[in-house]
Image (cartoon, rainbow, N blue to C red; front, side):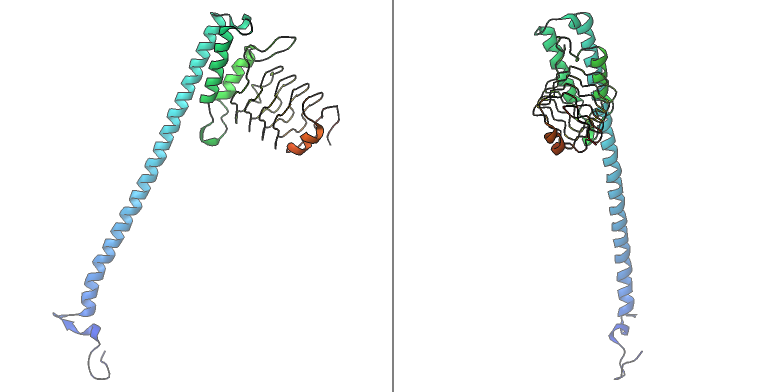
Length: 256
């Protein structure tokens, strides 16, 4: 290619036996290869970091699960000792053995906190199943519960099996947010100031339950039985609950 004045374009002029374009190609190819190498290495590093982070997260979760399992087993061992050696079940109200059982129970419930904000169907459920089957948290017939769950941390717990007999339980100020209490027997239970927001209380039996200042915001009360429940009005229930479909309200009124 020759320009109108007879001269070659500057890109085709020779320098040291090579055109400028030849020299540019010699420079561009290594630069491009270097860039490709750098990008590839960066992608490999990113991928490796991601794998390492995932592995570290899995190891942390496994270690946390192991710690929670050990805490639960230690609690069950301690409680077995209080039941068999210290006669917890026949102890009197206000005795040291009852205080010790309550403190240990509340402490381990805090340690069995659901991981990563998700619900944990095992730890708190197993603990509550033990307490219910050992008849330690129920009350009735003039008898107070042996272990009072006032202020207990039961957030996100799956209690639909463990709570099949919590009649007369003292759950004042307990945190039951997002807990699954479907089909639970909570007759005559004390839920004063309990946080039941977002809780699943469908088909739960809340006859004679004490609900003064309880938070039922967005709770599911489908087909729940609230006959003679005290401390809350039908209007308050309608304002707070997510659904009351089929529920029997205080006073015996059936919600459509």
